[in-house]
Amino acid sequence: MSRIDEIDTAPLAGRIRDAGKGLLLPRMTEDRMLEFVVVDTLEMLAPGPYGILEPPRLWPATTAEEDDLLCVPGLAFDRSGGRLGRGGGYYDRTFAAAADRRRRPRLFGIGFSFQLVANVPMTERDLLLDGVITDREAVETRTGIGRRTT
Image 1: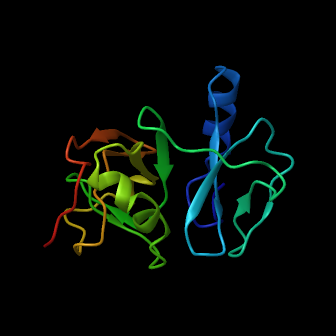
Image 2: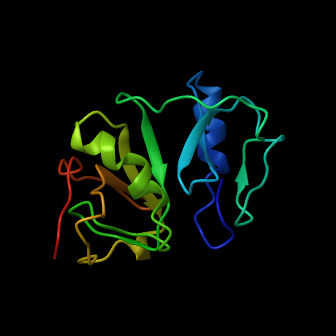
């Protein structure tokens, strides 16, 4: 779920569940990657390594498929699919191999409108997003498969 300084994703999670859709939430692994867990209830989430609520370890992980849409947090986003994360590289590492095969889930940045900026600096290790969802608009970049350098 969200950090205290991020847009609150609990209402979105509730709407996804109410619509009968599967809700996948990330959980950090010991090798600094993310794994995803189908979640039916938010009440059982517990703080993970950075204090972010995540599914308990006893719940089985699943694979995020190419027809899934995942909301990705960040500090800043741009309309070309650029994302400035917090420096840990969890999302980039987790989806790097899948992005090379063009078989990863759709990744949408999620945040406040002020986080949508003109240009986010990127490196060859940074994945592009498929779009950005803010409290004011949704932007589909159509450039999400691949990488960009500035």
